[in-house]
Image 1: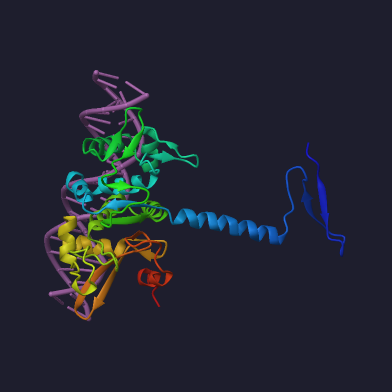
Image 2: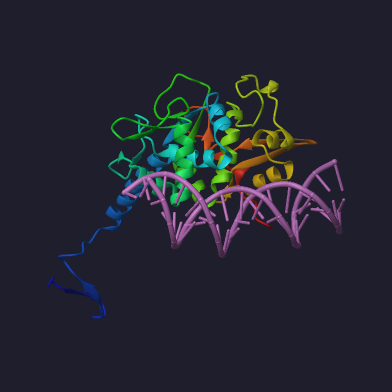
Length: 271
DNA sequence: AAGTGTTGTCTGTGGCGTGC
DNA sequence: GCACGCCACAGACAACACTT
C-alpha cells in the first residue's frame, strides 16, 4: 500500500483531493514550463529530420515500379539510418521483414506483392545477415555533395502517409524529379539556376508524367492535403498556371524553408 | 512459418453531363 | 473551355483457405 495524503485549502479548510507521495511528484510551474520547452525542442529536432532522393536515379524506380508501390517506398525510406538500413523504434534496431509489413500497415497478400516488386527491382536490398536496406542509389540519409537531390522531411511524409493512400503518395513520388531548386516549382528543367528560364509543367504535362488523365490529376491536386496544408499549390499568373510542391514536405535547398512560405499552402477556409 | 489463390468490400477513376 | 457533381465499373486490399 502506498502512502496517501490529503490536499487541503488552508484558507477554507476544504479538502481538495488525494496525493500519493510514493507515486506522484510536485513540480513548480517554472519547472513544468522548462520541461515542456525541452520536449518541444526534441520534437522540432526530429521534425526536421530528412532523407535525400536522387532525382535522376529515382526515375529508374518509377519505370520499374507502379504508382502505389512508389508510394509505399516513399514512406518506407523515411525509416533508414545513416547506413541506409531500415530501422525501427527509439533504439533504431534493424527491421525484420515482419516489421516492414507492420510499418507499412499492410496485410499478408498486399505486402507480399510489394516486397516481391521492390526486391526484384533492387530498390530494397536484403543483406547477407538478413538486414534490410534501401538502395542508396535512390534514397539515402546523411551528407552529400550531389545537388541533384530532393530532401524529404520524414515526419511530414509519415504524417502524409496516414492521411492519404499509397497511390496518392506515389503520385507525389513521380513528381519529385521535377522540383526546381530555388522555388519548388514543378518544371521540366529543375536544375536550371536562372529563375527566368524555368519551364513550368502544365496540368496536362503533369498528367502525362504520372500517367493518368488530366481529370484525375486535377482532383488529386485538390485532394492532397494534410494538417491544414496542401501538398501542391496552384499558382496563377494571369492565364498561366503552374504548380509548386510543398517545401515543408519536400525541399531542395539547404536548411528548412522560411515559415512565411507556409501561407501558399494553407487550406483556404470558406468565408 | 511463409507463400499463393479466392472472394467480398470499399474506394478511386474516368465517362458523361451541367452551369458558368 | 474550365470547374466540378454524379455514377458505374475496375482495381486495391483484407480476410480466409489452402499449399509447400
